[in-house]
Length: 125
Image 1 (cartoon, rainbow, N blue to C red):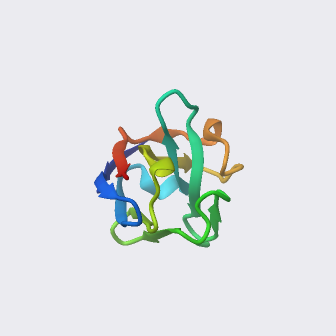
Image 2: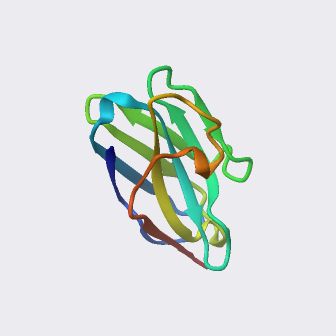
Image 3: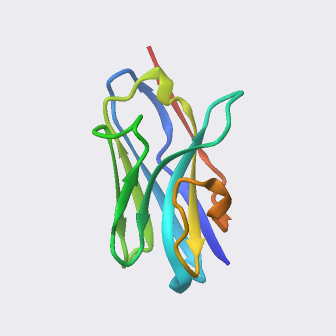
């Protein structure tokens, strides 16, 4: 199994930026894709962005297109989420997740095999 550790969350003002990192360890050779999800209080966990590990194909939720950028560093086994133009609606716990063995639909959280512990992002107005 893959172990994931997120970092980079925090408190930021409206319009500000944050970069989240997700470091993977363990059986990373079988990773097919990695994604970011978020969960706000009282809401379901929702898809934010994903990237395939080999081809680097990228997917975004409509709500973050043009503001967030997902990227990966294969050598470091790390995925990043650069978040710009943040708004209070982006406040949530952000989770990194990995799909192992083969790629499945990336925006369905049920298709992910490993999850990080989450990192809090709070956007204040």
